Image (cartoon, rainbow, N blue to C red; front, top):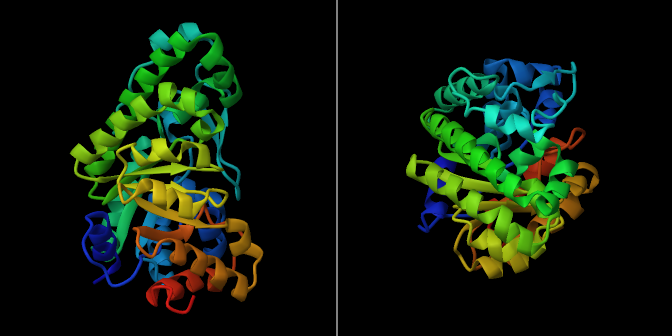
Amino acid sequence: MNGRERIQRLLDKEPIDHPPVMASFIAWGAEARKIPQRRIHQEPETNASILVGLSRELGLDGAYISSDNWIIHSALGGKVTFPDDDEPMGQRPVLEEWDRLDDLRVPDPQTAGRMPFMLAVARRAVEINKGDLFLEANIDSGPFQMAGILRGAEQLMLDVTSVPRKVHRLLEFCVEVAKNYGVAMAATGVDAIQFGDSTASLIGPEMYDEFVIPYQKSVLETIRKAGCYPFLHVCGNSNHLTKFLANSGAACVEIDGPADLKNTLEIFNDRAVVRGNVSTMLLRGGTIAQVEEAACACLRSARSHRLILSPGCGVPRGTPQENLRILVRQAAVQGSNC
């Protein structure tokens, strides 16, 4: 079976030959191809060819199709600058004043800001891929993280306690933005649609239950109904939120290096696939033996669970290609050498 079939079967709870492997990379991809990172964020052909091409060359089972987290910001009128060889940067929050909320309109993904750019990247990735790899396309942010971008992350943390009703109104708007964008992305032919709600990992369980899960579930359900597997990414230490993530409705939840993989898998109890969670810092600076052991530790934890072996987050610049290939090799032997 090829990588696409392997991941689809895993998600559908069907037998597979060995655990699949994926990796997310943008800056690392530009470095590997020796081009300015700006080109990945502004040229659909460059973006798709690098992300699909490098994933295939590394022997990965899927390709992560993305650019940055300022797509929705631009679609709602925010300005974005593009350093030559660094991440794009959004300029001042769109919703600095609450009275502007009523003026915001759900953007048309076919015409608004940089959404058309990402849809073009996804369509080109599908063409280049020819069904070999599992394609996971990013739609920027889940509702809570999107609210943090629109208000400013620090300000939103103050808002949830000082003006909770306004936050709920904003989250309702963010849900509609994410749904529209998700349905448009599904129409490109990708296999899965992912968003991050990483800002949400900074709040406690009670607030997560009130301000995150209801809105998150709504978007994930829409993605599934649109014909794609819904993926959810959470950066940082998500251990205090594991029970919520297990019940989110995501087909796959991506956890970062600081999260406890074994505990996450046990709490999930097969309700979703887990993707993760080899430390990106270890991948960048660790020895071959250290990376092999980290991959083995993940595979040992997942012997009776469903896992996509992966770095915990985006692969950083300076990471040796060999360290990524180690993940592929260890998964191919199903951890039998661990």
